[in-house]
Image (cartoon, rainbow, N blue to C red):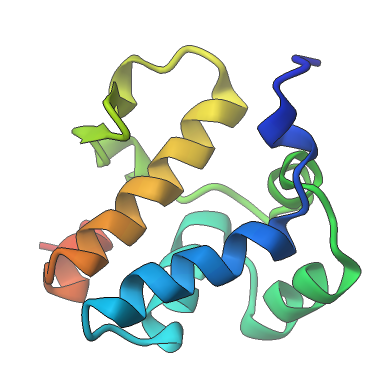
Length: 117
C-alpha cells in the first residue's frame, strides 16, 4: 500500500468539493453522483452509505462494486497531471474522478463525460 495522504482522506470530505465545483458552473449534485456511480459501480444508496460511513478514499475505491471498463478512455490533464500516465492504480482512479468532475464543470454533455459518445 502506498502512503500517499490523499488515500487516507475521508471521501466524505472530498465529495462536497466535487459538488461545489460542479454547482458553481451550473451543474447538479445528481450529475456528480451519476459520474461517481458510472465510475465505481455504486448504487445511489450505496454511495450515500459510503459517504455516511466516512470511509477513506482508499476504502471507497476498494469497496466499489467495479470500475467501469470505459474509464480507461478517460484521458487528459487534471491538476497538471496527465491522467493516462499515472502509474499507481488508486491514484489513477482518483485522477479519473477528478477529470470527470472537471469535464462536468466545463459544461461537457453528460453523454460525453460518461464516454457514451
